[in-house]
Length: 147
Image (cartoon, rainbow, N blue to C red; front, top):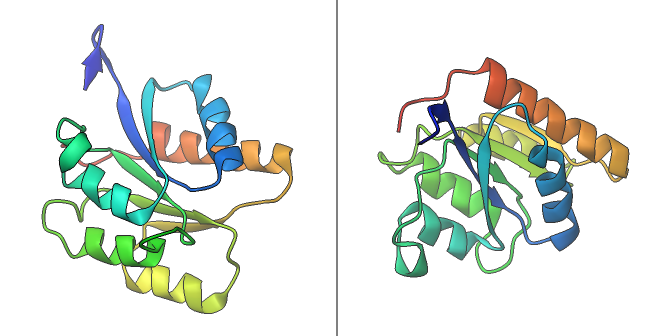
């Protein structure tokens, strides 16, 4: 998507914690790269957004997905598996952003083809730094696949 000739990156944040949503939005608000952040609070909504179903019929295809693992209704693990097994969605980079440090969660995320796994820090400043690092890498350095 372009706005005034400048590419705008569409980000889907799948997160049920309102505090983490606010932190991510604040961290990306002053981004070097123009972005639109869309937020859904559970795995069922995430798949509806990605498949443009119901109230998400006009949703854009995101350039990047930030996915929590511990979600209501459908876990982030299930969402990741569905995304990466769907030919229309599997090329969208998925950054797992979660509090889980469990080795099995990390292994499973990579087995299901997550593009990276980041443990959310509990400290506010560290969370902002992590979000800025995601921005620097995924929105500035990486060449994202075309929509």
